[in-house]
Amino acid sequence: MPEQPAGAATTAPIIGAPVTGPNQLTIAGFDEARGLRTGARAIVILPHIASGRGGHPGRDSAAQRSPDAKLAEAVGLTRAIALNVVHAEVVRLRSVSVSHLLGSGQIDRLAGLVAALGVEVVIVDGAVTPVQQRNLEKALKAKLIDRTGLILEIFGERASTAEGTLQVELAHLHYQSSRLVRSWTHLERQRGGFGFLGGPGESQIETDRRLIRDRIARLKKELEEVRRTRGLHRRNRQKAPWPVVALVGYTNAGKSTLFNRLTGAEVRAEDLLFATLDPTMRAIRLPGHDKVVLSDTVGFVSDLPTQLVAAFRATLEEVLEADLIIHVRDISHPDSEAQAQDVLDVLADLGLAPGGRETPMLTLFNKMDALPTEQAELVRARAGDDAIPVSALTGEGIAQLQAAMDTALRAGARVHRIRVPLADGRRIAWLHSHGEVVDSSSDEACMILDVRLSDKDKARFDTLI
Image (tube, helix red, strand yellow):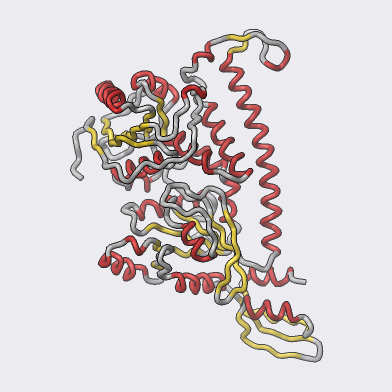
């Protein structure tokens, strides 16, 4: 679209009906009396500096996206917490105001819009400092949530396991600890006391900060115990004779639909950002494997809050232990390339940089059914050996994917000569199902097999008794 003068507003179309569901926003700095009801009216704004950078710093892949595409994603994130988006626009800036983020003219215009539309909450798709947030809320007379707070709210609503709940609470507390300079009226009061509950003259804001620090310390201890338990489970799985395949990809790329297609499970799969937060594992069968463990993981997103990257590292570490990674891409999305780069960036942060990882990775061009016929043919033509065109919804390409998974899990295999007692039919059958038997012979006591196995499969075989 043509570039507009700095300060102009670009209004993006609002697509689809607002999502509804039981939720209550609990952004730090607001008491329950100011909580937002389900379906509250909201506007979404994307600050965009005319030079091409957005209103918040991000990776290079984020800069590749058009402002309208980033705004559309922000609208999707807003609807994911059941807010009624009544207006969305790109606000073009010459520079960022340290005190208010936006210019005075833009603030006056938005304040009029908020009043006219009966808006209760303003979503800013970018980083907003506590001072900017306080000043904007006062000027707009509406609750304001930045991108970090928005994603934290989604994660807080969707986390269902004990570990996920702990991780979200920890991330939220880190976020809250920087927001205690906000305009809470009670934070200016002093309160007396004795003992460790707050000595004479301790201000409420100091008390709140101390309580948050104490809670963070407790959560870290609990999460450390969870990590130890998860580590034990991972070690047990490594001893088990089954390879692990992890699905990764940008949020709403279709991972859960693919997971359900491959496993026959009924994991929540919706056209909704962050429909899956807690990892799910199921056993599947492949042509050359009697059992493979498939893991559905949380989706990635551009400019993921650093608090969540740290808090969910234990969950994402499941990917590190996988024998095979499947990168699911929504090939029908206009920003598919930038989304793919965001996923690779997160994997690189985990130590799985392209070209330097030991874990093999397959790339899937998912949602082929959503492409026009001519465009779908072009995608199939350029996929080649580097990617597999599939539709998790219709089943297109699933057989090819399963064959590729089998081939990838066998990659790097070497031929091992293994002697197995003739009476040990279980281990002999395991070798035939997990490896390629290239030669066999026997003596009076043992079967002698030359079997092509990967190093991980050989280690698994050695654990069989």
